[in-house]
Length: 617
Image (cartoon, rainbow, N blue to C red; front, top):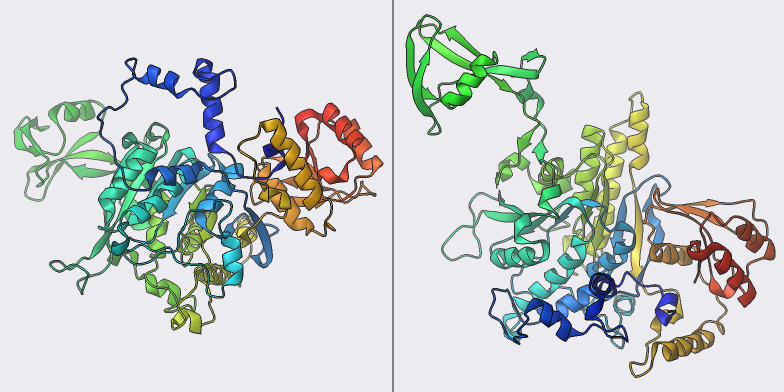
């Protein structure tokens, strides 16, 4: 049945999708009017219809509303900012300036089940104010209106002990975002979350609920400094943590870090099974097993051996064991140590191994403009384990843009084709900060500036070299497209249905609203903004490309493709008969246009001939 929602661009309605799934699986749970009968659900869960049952769960004030916010579709959109983009024609990297919950909802259209790795370093809950306010309901002052009216960014949402919501506000913020973000991960995807001790245990509980306890992988401890003061009265805190969860642990492949060249040199031998080196069975570690081994001269060797007797006998029979005389005349028992696929991530990460994060910024000419950025080497380290060389990597607390730099550098090192999506709220820098003195009014300005500097540095590394096709591919993928969270171009998105009226009545009200608000306007919209908004609503990724189609002489028509989806699109105010006739004859293509460009006859004919391949907005 047609409703007003069919004519409004918004992110996928997750609640509607879940209800539709239930309706398909359990139609008997729904009334004749199509509403879910909660009593039928209770009967399925508990035949005795007990109202309250005791169970283990993690609850806090505001949790239900946070979940509702996560699954409520947004009517916001993204506008392409060409002036701040770098190499937009060939790159597939994206930087988005905007409130991340709304952005994540928009990304659902084109990126659901496509992200391999999510890394986030959210604001730690220190009791101070933080920026995130999730109430974007109609009737409130909209986010984009606040940002446009304030030179200092957006208003703060209080997160203080005095409010009685010290933990709750922070948990509301994280819970809603993780619920949406999980839907962006591929089945074999993984998420890394940096956190400190204040909310570590709470974050574990939230992630257990969002991702499932069975998908918990580990908690990494990362050394951040050596000694010095800290907020703790009794301890000098030198570390933070990284929580790691899989989307579906049964689909997750091994997460190995490649061996470095120095380590690989020890594998000096090779046979039909692969590379190996001769390792000794005698070990001084505790994980040894005592038993007797017979040497080639018949003598019995007593020792604590690295492998079990059963494994030793199997290896000996397979030619994997050798006996070598040591300088003192005694026997050394050795086995072929085969080269593994890679090294496992260690749960203890030493900051000294990962170099200084401040040095990362200094080398780009951005010294002291951002506090406590994560080290690039650290992000590269986890990406080596969690990503493949063509993965999409998402960071929706983009900060200074470390993740973007890590992806770019890692691609250059292993000739990969990873793509990043960074999301950063336009948070104002402090008026007395080094960042403001350097000309950065918002944190998102630093995000963009840093990754521009990374691009220039990477390009400079190719100077004087003979450029190979692989090098050229690396150069082509450098860059990023910038988008900003924006209010929809179409006034119709402000329509509020009357809850007392039927769907048919609300559709009629909507059509009247459109007639009053849109048809009376001059409709001098920006074509690029219209195209971006419509393509996002149709599930296109932000890396879409447009190719002008000169065969259409009466209208401006583009072929849009993102590598997965393809469609012709035209946003002219009037659609010529010749253009309509083309698509009536080519019903195997997809075509998108503006509804006001058609009279009722053209719209009916296109819909009848093309079916779902035709979309008029």
